[in-house]
Image 1 (tube, each protein chain N blue to C red):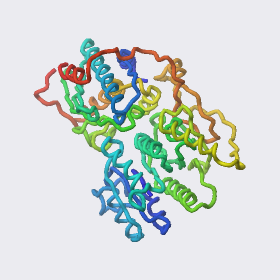
Image 2 (tube, rainbow over the protein chains, first blue to last red):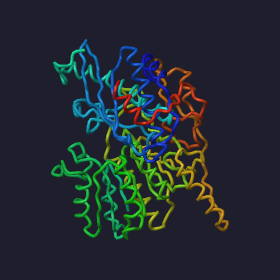
Image 3 (cartoon, chains in turn green, yellow):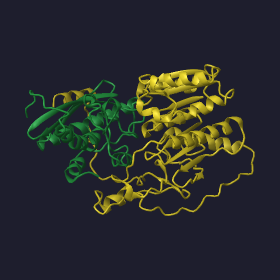
Image 4 (cartoon, rainbow over the protein chains, first blue to last red):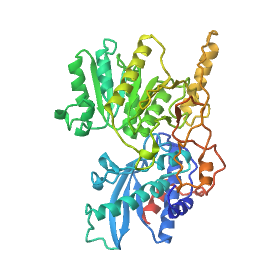
Length: 167
Length: 328
């Protein structure tokens, strides 16, 4: 899995119960409620640990999600927009998180800015269907990706800090 | 015939040459032609920037002008497109309103395969799945008959053993490569299987692997999993059982399956492992009965009580939760 800190953070994210996807009408609404509950708890945990690093919201149907994520590097806060669609096969398959503004800037990315996760992620997700949800995707997918890629992009001068974002 | 393809095109050329058996091709792809695709000799540099389905149609039309095409340049895994995709499978046949004869999947990712699998299970659509491994030295083709054979979700993804010396890899387990030759072989195997299926000659393979390092072609048939996560697969299995019960008894030729040979270090357990022994045990599940040369990419543990807290019970509506999130 990931490092100790990530493991601990993930163990405190509530697991989800309903195995349904966006084509399942009422059951999908139930799943969405669980997603929001889990996300809210995860954000609260992050705030308590002084590591509030993302926000997410969705369209009414819960099929399109968008938000922001932050990464602090050498006391400077970097902000990125992110987005993803819920695939029809969710939660059997995890959504592909995209950071459009970084498209083409790193090899660890597919077309359109979709982040490329490690070999560990897919089997881990598969083993935990349907208990893992979007909060887990953030903690195990996007979080570790930012931790590896952003310092690297900064070091290479590919991204610069915007003056307005001071932590 | 409906062709869903991401990555490779040799298939298209072979099949074009085989018509009049194929009169109509529906092509689905989400990608554009780029210079990186030139190693496969199907697209040409002047087509860079066009969508792959557009470029494919031009090229294939030149090879055989008698085949009709319908192209769709979109991602089938989104809600909107998936509905349209399912509609084309069920109504896009040679005679509009009828289903297609066969769906062929030549995609390069798990998510797309699962989406196609979901659609075909729901529609009882026979399809063939194909793929080439990330290291480009193995590949496979698979025939899926919903309810009768294993569907794509019945077992974790299968892996044709590549027999690469792990010591030659710089990053554990990863050696991304692209070999048009491997793709050509797998495409040929796929089209061959399609012809046998459509024209009724020879033995159609349910699963045929290709290990390029040793030229080993393991083959097998995998039955459907009664505990498959996809409820449509389970439903199709019930339908199939009913049909079989009603059929007059026939001599069934059993395929001899070779004994399972214990794998070597497939999970890449390193000296300094990120995964503890306990976690590994928890993460391991049963391995299906597979012949030599084929294994699973990972295993799923038996469903347990679950360790960890689940979300709390609440009366809050979805709108209230969305508003709460916005205020954070």
